[in-house]
Image (cartoon, rainbow, N blue to C red; front, side):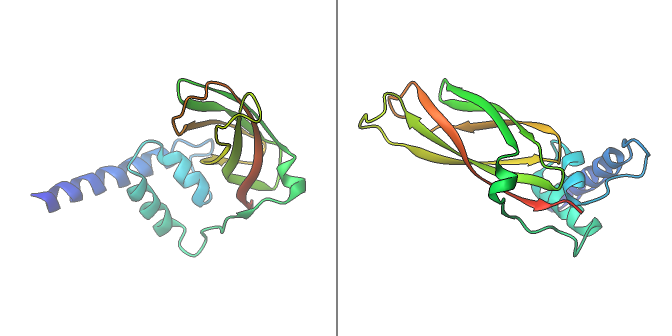
Length: 158
C-alpha cells in the first residue's frame, strides 16, 4: 500500500513539474536547475529536487560564498515581530543567483545580557529579482533587534 502511495505521489509530482515547466513565456520549460526548482513550487522538495536532477544531471551549480562586491549589491529590508524575522531581499547582481543569506540579530539595548545570533535563511533569488525572507527566531525575552546582512551564498548564473 505504501509503495503504491509513493508511486502515485511520484507520478503526480512529475506531472506537476512537467505542467509547471510548460507555463513559461516561450512554453519551453525551465532552462536550468534553479528555474526547475522554482517552477516546482509547493511540491515535495525531495521529489522536486530528484526530478530536476534527472532533467539537469551534471549541471547542478555549486554554491560558494559571495564576494564582497556581490554582497553589497544585495538590498535587504525586514524586521522582527512575534518570534519571526521577515522581510525581502533584492539581488542587484546580474551574474549571481543567491541561495542563502545570513543575518545577524543583535538585541536592543546593546550590551544587554541577551545573545546576538546569526540565522541562515535559504532563498532562491535569481539575478535582478526580489524575494521574501523569513525565519523563526530562537525564543528569549528580546523584543527588539538591530540586524544586518553579514554573508550570502550563491552561484554564478550561466
